[in-house]
Length: 187
Ligand code: ZN
Image 1 (cartoon, rainbow, N blue to C red):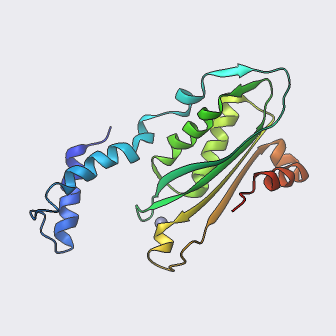
Image 2 (image 1 turned 90 degrees about the vertical axis):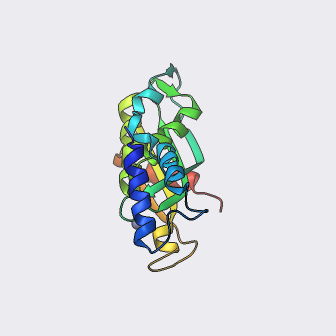
């Protein structure tokens, strides 16, 4: 999927374009390192949410599940700079639940791509709706965008919050608000 050779050529071109010497000691292996790094940070393109959400358990009682503070790192598609933060996921099952670690892996599938935070939030919610057909899903992402904090408007520490509400969370504003309070990070 990932074309190592192309990434390495591109990285070398950038190094040259900014006026650096791609042959100097410290930079010599950089294109190769970037190639290997992209293999890892763009791994989401070769994964599907079904791969991680296909194993579920059947439950009698549909108690809500809330998983908070799932750390993620992604890359903004506008600047190809990292944005990173926490994902919080809540769902009300309808007979099916997944292991807690699968929620984190589902976040990874979408984080390891070029992304915008709004899309990523909705994609995670849609994937859970699809895989578990729960009564509702609520996904909150809060992230720092380095394209905003290390350049441009330069507001260090500022965070962007995005929310995606599906099913009962979309229909019932009061329920949605109650869960948003529960999911709110303590920071
Ligand atoms: Zn950006």
